[in-house]
Length: 402
Ligand SMILES: *Cc1c(COP(=O)(O)O)cnc(C)c1O
Image 1 (spheres, rainbow, N blue to C red):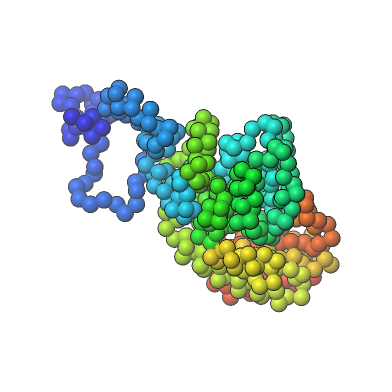
Image 2: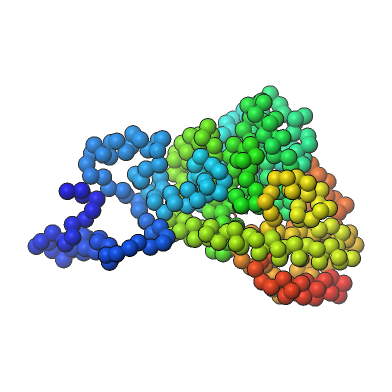
């Protein structure tokens, strides 16, 4: 008998204590199956015999097998497959947060003595990893211009990774990723990209030549502001280093969280189409305001990265930032933010709802000088009716000068 399928009834004559442990393991009903993969919660995984256990342990280094909770479970595997599909990847690994995905990527491919080139446009906590982790572990880092124009001249003898984020955080600078991929290929460097903005729908770094693509699934993949997760998708050649290091560090996620993200991915493309359409309506409206110096969204024709966006992206999303005329100070910007009714004040983004936050560009960039620029406000445009959002922004702008 296959011991993984439990007996139909509890062992006859077993005590209530035993029946309590063994009862209820049959499917609750005969018939079909649910649409969605069930949540499989497990730490221990049971084997039929020692030979099977030994075989699974031998094979699990190369194959994805259900052998222990820390090495994933069928719910997580289903989400990994969806992300691999989105990213065009060989395989995908899940992490508890987007930041954990970034940190484990650096930890998997870099060692003391190595040199890393990081884009000036990266998500700020990724930049902070340089001081908190890389420098103390003797991994050197140089920031390159967000458009990638100075990458070649910044390569050193020990350089082994180019880490890009395209479009960049907060003001969405574009770099020519295929060109960076060619530079990396010729010199044998690894090209890593943070693809949270593109979410695998609007931008696909692996198809453009990157080796590794990272996403904060916390954002659009989940889409409902109620779960944290990060994903790392790789090519076949780069998979093993990530998988081994992540296993060594015991990296996994809860199947309940994987279920939520998996559920979110089913409506990802439909939500993004609305975020994009609503975001553009707000972006064009902002461009018409005299209080605004610049509107940042790569889908706008006068964004410096627009040509690359047109070439490499399938669309945009709900992220729109804008710079106030330099005459407005931080307190004026905060009056605008505080007066908004439909925009939640908060970090993160990618949920169905609109958000607003003040961006500190002086802190977020070191290669580009932002010292004489105006206040930058980041909006995430949600699924609300854009006419209502514009009415809210209109009264927000009135508070600027109040
Ligand atoms: C939010 C974000 C992350 C980090 O994701 P968390 O799940 O919040 O840790 C990483 N990269 C980018 C570009 C992000 O916007």
